[in-house]
Length: 371
Image (tube, rainbow, N blue to C red; front, side, top):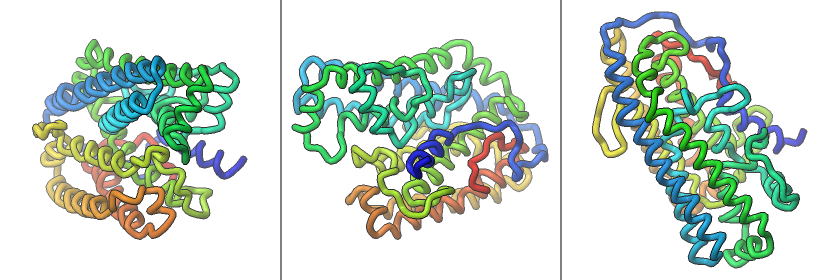
């Protein structure tokens, strides 16, 4: 197996769940006077459902402009398509931590992140599908579909706009594949949103325990896993930190073809902060994990330590220049990217080990790196 293939499998397995509690999980139960239903209600009504609603409106637009591009490919419609992709993929960062319930695994179906958010995209699989004129967007080739496959098609790899337009002009299959990808994303996001707008919302709020399978446990685990995906895959992978890697691999950054890796990283980290606070995207504060911790012994100290480290991470994140692209920074002087990785690594203890212990919630996934 090539190193590239091995690394792709690592990313494809980013969200693989394991039912056995990790070694740092604790069984200690916190005081149970906290109103978890109120917290879950805030998350459901003010964070999760609005995030999916916003994403659905943006994937609707993405499909619309992809269709307009198919009908009249030009520099103008290509630019509109790229803009729609960037807006949809930015909003995608705000649902990244909600990969449970209707967005979670079911039978052969992986979670929504794996199905439409896998990176790096496989250029070979995408091109082979287009040349062959035959593809299946429900199979195991998750690195040939989703947001990052669309990114590859519309931004190209070291190609000018004229060259990208020529690839579409010479291939009806390329247009068909693009529309199929956009439609697949829109359908999957729509299904999750419909569930949250239906019976699942009440089920989520009422399942207010802390045991494995409870809503609090699912939300907390996906919150931590989403945070770790920033450290382990959006930075660790291109920096060459993952098992089996022996050097930096700048081409493995998220959003490599568009050069928007840093923007997506910042949006993702902002979404993590909002979940910590129970705060909406427009700044309305509600009951979140922070308030939960205020009600358990040792919680205030952990809040202080966590928020001090959040500030350190933000400082390191804001120290990254917007140009050159993150892949170019990693390939050259990557000291500031390394500094961010170090600060993110320091945060793992607070979000994962200490928070799990104080809230009495088992970690039910493995990041596979010994954290």
